Length: 276
Image (tube, rainbow, N blue to C red):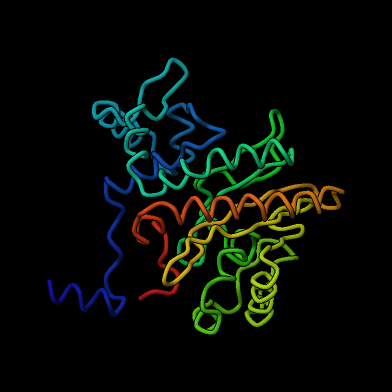
């Protein structure tokens, strides 16, 4: 075992092939909002796995009630809802749900709830106007923090001096408008902190802009536990209306979050950004 570990560290041993468990998770991740029911062939392509492997995995996952066999293919089972409801993020989504609904109804544009995971923003929830989707960020999607208004709103309340030393350089870019220079990005975070709002113009999606604000849980060390945003077409005349609505909604959510007697760890299930 020691010889194998040393050889592996030296790059002399080939990495282990994916395990059955990792392949099963690749299969589960193939399902998304636009593909809730998938055929065996579609799953094999999406998970990049042989059909024979997918067939065996599906049979076992159906037996375990993780996946259901549908007349048109396969879908995640209802038991997955029970598992999802036990995550710390589920409580945050439940708290935010009525506020997000009100924000959607008032602005008429797509709204998001997001949290940090290292240097990425994870979309916990998204509500869109009926028949219209103004965002490519599906629930569970991850985007670089520097490419979203949600990321700027969340990071603006971190220790920016420490953050500057931790950020990767250059920062990733998803569009020509993404800020790749760390110093420039830190300057944007200072502005977001001062304004209480963060902005993204034509990123990560061309033609769409976003305004976000943090949800602050007060205490001995106030922290942004999440952020909300509204996505709208660039150049929309609704900017001032959206700014006020986002600021008001984030303030209401901050009061609600602070009123819950829960630990910081529970409210920050993805808070691993600068902590070692």
